Amino acid sequence: QGRVRRAARRGAKGGIGRGGPRAMAEKDGAGAAEAAEEPKEPKEDAPMEQAEEAAEEAGEREKDAPEDPRPRAAPGAVAVNPADTTLNAMPAAGGRMLMTLIDSGFQYFLAGARATAAAKSGRYAFEVSMVESLAPQEAIRGAHAPQPRQVLRVGVSTAGSSLLLGDGPDSVCFDTEGAFTQGGHRQQRVAGKFGRGQTVTVVLNLDAKSPNANTISLFRDGARIADPQKLPENLVGKPLYPTVTYRNVTVQVGFGPVARGKLPFKCRMLAEAAKEDIELAPVHKGKCEVVFPVGLPEKGYFDWVDMFLKNNPGYTELSDRKIFEWAQASGLWGQRSQA
Image 1 (cartoon, one colour):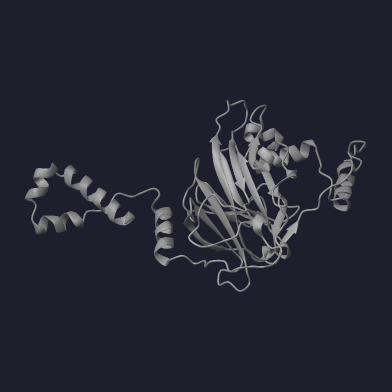
Image 2: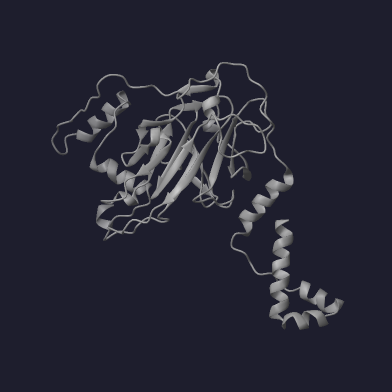
C-alpha cells in the first residue's frame, strides 16, 4: 500500500508539472508510456523505506511464546540499575524515567544506564520511549559540539562494559536514525527511524530452539522496522543487559510485565522472565568506600591506579583522563593542544 500511495503521488506531481489536468486528459497511450520512462526523483529515505517494506512482505519471523510454568523473576527485580549509570544520568519515577544533566557542559556528554537483570536464554523484550527532546544553550568555545545534539540508542551490553552503546565490542544497539552498531562499527540504513512520542520495543532472542536464535530485533509502535540482526560471536552465550544511551532527551524505560505496545506475536517482557533465564546484577550492601591515591608526577602514579582497578573492578575511577575519554566517546573534539 505504501508503494501504491507513493506511485500515485509521483504520477500526480509529474502530470501537473507537464501542463496540468487539461494536458493530462489530452495525453494518449503513447504519451503515458513516454511519461513512465522519465526518471523518478531520488528519495533520501528510500533505503530505510525499502527495509521496512521488505520486513512487511517477508511476514513476521517470530512466533507466539508458548506457555511457561517455570517460576518468574521477583516483582521489581528488573529495573534500571542506579549503581550502573554514568555520572550525568538521573533515574526518576522509580527508575522508569531517565533524565540527564544539561548544563555546565554536560549537554555534550552521552549518558548511559544499564538494567539490573541480563537475559541468558529465552526470548524477551523491553521498551523505550522518548518523551522529551531538549535543546540546551550552547556553552562551548574552542571546540566542535558533537552532532546530533539529541541522541538515543537502545540495545544490550555485557556486565562491566562501557555504558555508552557502540563504544567497543561488548554491545549492540539501534539508534534513532535507523543504524545498527556492533563491534564498534555503525551500519547505516538497517532499520526505520524513530523519535519523540514513539515507543520502540527491543526483542532479544536467545532461544536455542528458535530459527532466530542469537538475534536482536526492533519494533516501532508494535510494527517491525528491522529484520533480526545477528549478535556478534563474542556476545553469544553471555548474559546481556538492556542498556540505553542518550543525550539531551528524556526517556521512559519499560521492562513489563505489561507492555505498552502490542507486538504481532506474543512475547514476554523481561520482568516476566523465568528465573533461570536471567542473571541479576550484584547489589552492593553496606557502606561505600572512596580511595584517594597519592603519588608524585612521573613516578608511576597511573600505572598503580590501573593495577588497582584491575584487581578491584568494583571501583570507578574519577580523573581528568577518564573525563577526557568520556568526552571523546561522546563525539566531543577538543583543541589540538589537548589531544
